[in-house]
Length: 254
Image (cartoon, rainbow, N blue to C red; front, side):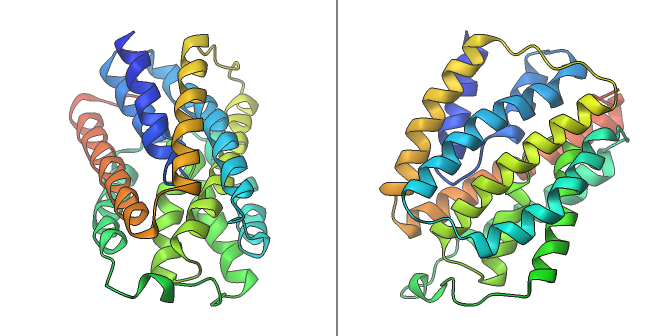
């Protein structure tokens, strides 16, 4: 019951910023001794549930932009399938990504007075650049068992392609698509569909609904950016700790 409660809190916290919580699910399931073979697919399954809810809420709020999302997901879907199919040793990848996320959190959380509205969605890079960004992040998503939002959010904010609400909306759709592709790749490698405890589904639905509604309709951009920074720090520290455990004590995902 403690694990179930924590999973619900993770879903709530991550959904406020357009994420679905996979890094948090992986961390707590590892700590609670869930079977290592099932951690990644169960996290992806929960990600799909929360990602769908979050994407719907941010779409209802009017923050989804297809010109951002389409080239990203077109690149990420096949890459996430490949990443989900592979089962490589991950310590180096996780350590590098963890460092990047922690450093990214500094920039994401820093909001200069009067600059929030200047970070608008009017600046658009080419579709090819977004496509290749989707390929890279989709592969990382499938490989690590997360939806990719923790990689996409700081990248889009650093590139100033959209304001913070639209970045959250883009991340929500990106996470949903990549989680489905990653889980499909996992099953294509000959693995069985994971058995997810019904109570996990219930709490992530409740947490996802409340968190995404708060983020899409009520949290001001400044607070949302700081929430994003907190999520990125948690995700980065989780990956660094997990990489340390894997390199020192053997792979968790053996």
